[in-house]
Structure formats: C-alpha cells, structure tokens
Image (tube, rainbow, N blue to C red):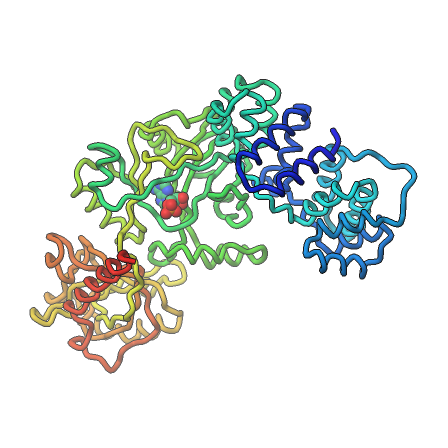
Length: 588
Ligand code: AMP
C-alpha cells in the first residue's frame, strides 16, 4: 500500500478539528487498507510503532534528522536549519526542502507503508555507538524517495512531532464504521481494546473477521488491561444511594497503582497509564513471586512507600524517588515499599474479569501468602453508615487517603469509570499551616537500622483543664541518626516503670516516660481517631483527634515545659479551622 495514501489522510486531518470529519477521513483510509497492513497504519496515524506499553519509540534527535535530510537533498545543514527556523516545524521544512530538491535520483523506489514502518522500526531498535550513522542512513534513504507530502509526515513521525492528537476513541469509531457498517458496534471494539490495550491488534481482528473475533478477545499475560476507575462520593450516604445496603470497603492507600503480570520467572509491571514500569521496582520483581501461588496471574496492587522502622505508610511523593534511570538499587534501599494487592484479573490461564468482586477477592485471598512485603488490601463488608465512618477513621489513621467502596456483585469493568467502584476521601485535606509542640510520653523500639534505639515516639498534647496528656500521634519520620541518638540520651533518664496516670492513649508503648520533653512536629492534617485521646468525645462520640503524616522538624523545644506544649484546645481549633478553609474553598 502506498504511503502517500496515509500522508494524504494525515494532511486532510491537519485541516480540521471536527470529530465527524476526522472520523470520516479515517473511515475512507481504512476501507482501502489491506487487513494485514491495518495495524501498521493505525500505529503510524498516532505517530507510534507499537502500543505505548511496549516502549518502542522512534525518537530520532532533530540534529540527526537535519543531517539526513541534507544528505538526501544535497541542501547544506545551515540552509536546512534556516528553513526550519522560518517554518517553525521540521515537517514543513522537510517538505519545502524536498520541493526544491536539487539532487535527483535515477532509480526511485515507490514508498510503501510497509517500507516506512519497517524502516522506522529498524531505527527504533538501533542502539550503541554506530547507531547514529545507521539512523542517518535509513532516514536519508527514505527521504530520498519521498515526495514532499510524504517527507513532511515522515519527518514529523521520526522526530515525534506528529501531534495530530487522533484519540483512541476516534480510531475505534472509524474502525467500527469501516468494518461493521456502523458506530453501533463500537462497544465491542472497545471491549477488545480494554482487554488488550493494543489498537493495532483490535484493528486487524475487526478488519479480518468483523465483530466475530472481538467477542472472544482474551485477556493474556503481558498484555496490560485498561484499569477500572472509580467515581468520587462525598459521604457514606451518597455511596449507599449508588450501591445499596451492603458493599465492600477497602483501604485507599496513597501510592502508585501497579498492574502485575507474572508468568513463570518473568514479572512485568505496568502503571495506571499502562507504561512499563518494571525497572523502577526491582524489589517487586524479586519478591512478588514468592507471595503468589499461581502458575500465571495478572494482579492489581497499590505500591506504597513505608517507614521501615515503624511500618508506617508514607505519602505518595516518597515513591517518586524511585522514578530514576540510574542508582535504582540505592533508591530501593532508601525508599522501601509494600505491595498491597486489591484485585485479580487473570489466574492460571483464566480471565477473572467476568467474576464478581466477591469471587475475585476470594481468589486473591487464596493465592496470596502474605508477608512483610506483599499484603492483601485491608477490606471489610459494611452495612451501615457508621461502619463506613469507623473504617474510614481506621484507614486515615493508618496513613490512607480514604476508602474505596466496591459493589460485591460487580465484574471488573476494564477501562471504565463506573459507579461500581467509589472513592471516599476526606473532604478536608489541607496542610496544617502551623507546627505543634508536643510532649514525648512513650516510645516504640525500632527495627532495621534503628534496632536498639527508638523507632517511633508517642506524643501528646496538654489538656489544661484536666492536667492530662492525651496522645495525638505516633511519629517515626523526620529523625536523622544524630537526632535519634540525642533524643534517646535525653529520654533515658525520663523512663518510668508504669504509665503516668495523666497519660491517655489507645496505644501501648514499649517504654513510658515522665511527660517532660517537648519536640516540634508538622503534619498534613488533623483527623478523628479511635486510638488517640486528645479532645475525646468532643467532636464525635468515641473519637479523639490525631495528626496525619506527622513529622519531626528536628527541633527539641528545650525551652518549653510540658505545660507550654500545644494544648488540646489549640488542636481542636486547628481541626475546626481546616474545615472552615475547605468550606471557604468550596464557595469559589
Ligand atoms: P484516584 O487516583 O483518586 O482517582 O483514585 C484511584 C486510585 O486509587 C487508583 O488508581 C489506585 O492507584 C488507588 N487505590 C488505592 N487503594 C485502592 C484500592 N483499594 N482499590 C483500588 N484503587 C486503589
């Protein structure tokens, strides 16, 4: 098939933004494309060679492309650069240069889609020292035979500048019209696409066999599935309206969604946008196999950074340190994670997409052997709004963002944002403006590098009216080795054998202290807590207030007595203020 037909379509499409017209141009092109070539055409239309998750990119540096154009056209590099600056677009510059081509070749080969695609594929695979020369050779040979209109789009594709923004769904519409006669069948194409995330594969299937093959599209290991998404709700009542009386509530952890594909010794990980992220998580690759009892599987999990000494979950930002090309081993040590599995889409050769949530959860619990690294996401079945509230409090106090609520009899709706999954976050999530000065009342022994020292401290605010020290958080973050040593020394002569009756906490510390030492803490917000006792029963019966994501600032407030510490009343004011801020924000 002549590449000029694709270039022509791309040219028409550049001239319109109307979706109907865009679709019609695609339909016309697909109808004249032989079925075996259709995947190549579909990828090229989006400036790609394969689906994104395979990570095959053309990506030629503009400098090399300019040199190649110079070689094939006989026009000097500075002249081309001048033309490029004038046009502001390398594709346009290439077309202009080719029009003025001074050097003509005698034997002109016809440019076919296959030739363009295969050449670009070879270029994408080139690596190493000599690759630049080879890339240049391949490109100049293509441009040598290209017409200005063809050269324009070849240049745009090789420099990753096609930018026509032809959406997946426009292509699915066009395929449906071209090969099944109407847009009605788009949902079948969409289903196939959601299951394999490969537009080329879907296009070939429908071009060769119409709708028949689409119905039988199979989930397979190493073809990522487009993830199911959740709708947002603001309250348990709203969730109940959408889901009925009984549903599952899971922790919603604040990490990175990872789709884990395992077969024999091979593990591949995909992100939420289906990018291959295996290289960022060598620890998952190494350890996950031990926790999964299955020959092959596709699972979903939230990878979350943790404080290894205390086991606390850390905010999402910590995970971003993993996003690097080099020194990944160091990053793995410095930013340890846990993997929290929440769904299974495929196991031992069979798809689980059509099973209900309940059935999938059961399979998940059966195939996962939990260890310190891999766990099944905490879940409970809830029947009342109070049960949702309680579980939400537990979740927030364990460092979660909120809850995911899931309908018990719903299938896994790949690629869909459906009301079978709801997310319930706290409505107020502002960073606290102020730091707090809190009294150290207890400590927990550390693990790992903190063995023999304290891994986390239990902190209290001061209740002036009752002269008591109700706890507000457990903190294990923000300490350097030195500050930890220093605090250990200072606290060593404050140890008391029995908890001081003025201390109130739902946590049992390993060591209790005389309430004397005051340290400074920052936190992301104040939440209700069944464990911590500051302002107990004041805002909600049975709940106190707690700090979320507390962090030691490094300051020991030697100048402060425990009576000067942040008071319970101040903590309550901070809690109420953060609510007001959110309400004020909502008005705008
Ligand atoms: P959001 O990014 O706010 O739309 O929330 C959806 C994201 O929450 C998912 O993409 C996951 O990364 C994450 N998540 C955390 N815990 C769960 C869970 N238990 N079930 C599903 N998604 C979860």
